[in-house]
Length: 250
Image (cartoon, rainbow, N blue to C red; front, side, top):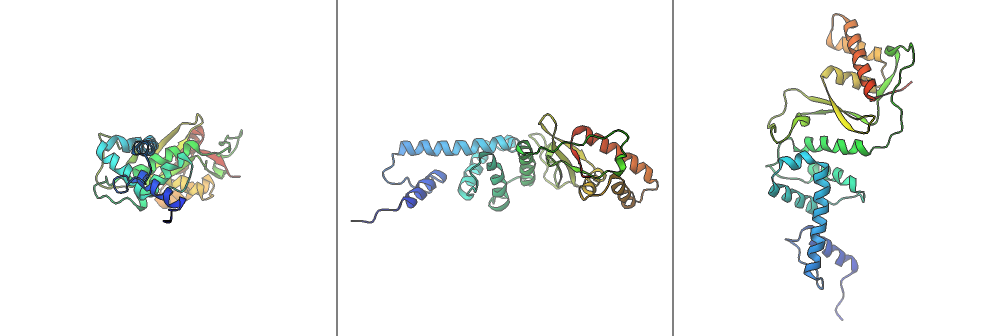
């Protein structure tokens, strides 16, 4: 009697015919019509998850290139999670480690990361309460940091502006600083930061008090009047408190 293929071998052939039907024949004794249903379902589900997670990338990519990218993702990358919303993170891993196409936009990886952040923040669990100032509390002496649902990010491209009418082909002259956060209504939005406000967040997240952070920024800027920097820091902090992006460390 000829040796029968193992069940795992049959599964492997079946999966390969789904992932890459152009290069892998349908396993023996499987109805081609039924196999076509599996192939379409698999592709459509993956394509749907990726297009929903990365709507801007989908919008700026023509249909043929998009279909080729999704198929390449299916062929090259082996997802390591059963969670559907984690497919977007797997797509990022694919772009970082397996995608090889010189025709891709130069900003593709950064735009993908920015779009993934919105999804990641929308599902992130956090029961920490945003900061509420007490009466007569000295703001400058507080140790504050960003909520886990507020991420300070830096990009080489203005990813928050990219769309059908704007697609940069060169790195920006200066880093793009963004604070992307989930607001109290559970919507995800962003603030564009400048280097000073981004530095203030960075110092607060290192554990400095507002006063210490402001003083260090004054020194770094060699500002002639530190009180002006203090007032600027206060203004920023009050705005961030109103948006619910800060928490108390002490």
